[in-house]
Each structure stands twice: as structure tokens, then as C-alpha cells.
Length: 214
Image (cartoon, rainbow, N blue to C red):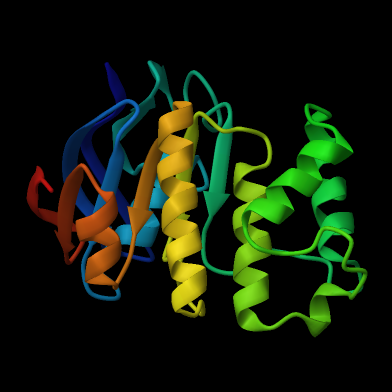
């Protein structure tokens, strides 16, 4: 089944074409890798799929619903994009509990489980402002997986992580796929793409240069 259908997607920002006539189909329950230099369009494409930006022309359809027309953003979406907005004065658990209170779909126990899965201590009462970059990346990943998303979008998820952390996150991504999630992941780490992904899409200057099985 097709999870994501992108049809002639173009996005123009301030007279600059950041996504240029992209057409892609991505199958459900697969890990889809995206590679390209900084400015190639990876993050903008993820924003379009997430409903954070709407196309100038073309369409993005996720699980049969057109973003910006049928729905504002995909249902059951887990997302890590650039800097996540965390409250620096609160602990990791407090931050995730605040986010979880929006939809009220999960319990405190499920929040703690998500924090544990990314290698952090859910009982750690330190405020997020005292977290290292790697810890902030991990808590961002915990918020992305805690509500058991159907679509998981991860932009450079292994940034700022040591070797142990990288292996933990790769295992977590595989677990999410096995649970049934469709995963979109970008990475400058070639091993992330080679070891994890079922397909690879290469972006260059906002266009698809290549789309192939991994």
C-alpha cells in the first residue's frame, strides 16, 4: 500500500524554489532514506509531508488524505525536525507530559517507557537546559515515538550522539518499523542509510536526483 504520494510538488519561498516538481510514491511500513547536501531540500520536503508548509503547486497525500485539503497534517505523526521547542526550565518527563496532554492518548507510564527507550532516565529531574546536545536529541526522539505514530519523520536523528547512542537509535527505528510505522529518515551518516533503509531518495537543489531501492 502507498503511504505517501507526492505529485509534482513545488514550493516557492521568497521567490526561491526550494522544492522543484517532486513526484514520489513511498510504500507503507518501510524505512525511506533521504540524502543530499545541506540546502538540497530534505528538511523542506519533510515539512511539506508534515503539513508545516503547504505546496505552491502540486499535492502531498498521506494515507489517502491530501495535506492542506482533506487534513491540515497527517494523523498519528511523530516528528523530529531541527530544533524541537522544549521548555528549558522543565525536566524531560515534564516536557513530554505537557505535549501528551494535548491529545490525551497515552499514560504517564507510556511516556516513561518512551524516555527509557531512548536511553534516558524518566526519573531524572534535571531541567532540559542542563541537558547535553545528545540528551536533547534523545528526548526529541522520545516525544516523536511516545504516541505510537503511524508515520515517523526523523531529520538527522543521530546528530550529536555518540556511537552507543547511534546504535540505540538505529535499533529503535527498526523497532518502530516492526511495530507497523512508516519511517522517513534523513542522515549525513552513510551507515544510517545503508543499514536502516529500504529505499533511498537523493535530493539536489530541491529536485529528486535519484530514487532507488537501498
